[in-house]
Image (cartoon, rainbow, N blue to C red):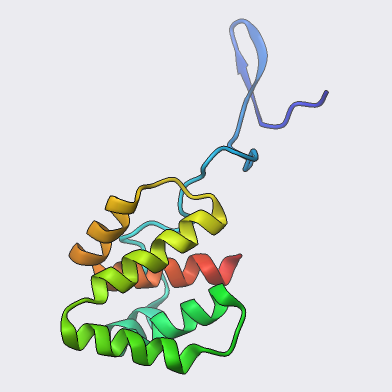
Length: 130
């Protein structure tokens, strides 16, 4: 059996510190933080001015289809009705379930209610990486 991790030398000798390598069944963290949206300025600007485009791209990539326009239009309509946090929370839950990311349904909706643009950027970057 091999051990993966970072070797560290202590007074008791060499030890391996176990890293979270995506063990099946163990939820992991998001690859990008919620407030890490400014590290991709292009995506950040698009999301600020037309969040429906970012949402449409994320859903299309998540579902592996060409539904970018229809999903973006749906998000635009939900923004007009003030219900975009519901649609965003549902999508965030789908992303978490598919990528085994820790969190809760309540947290998904709260994130989209309080910080929808940062959530859209985080989700888009997560889906693009997988």
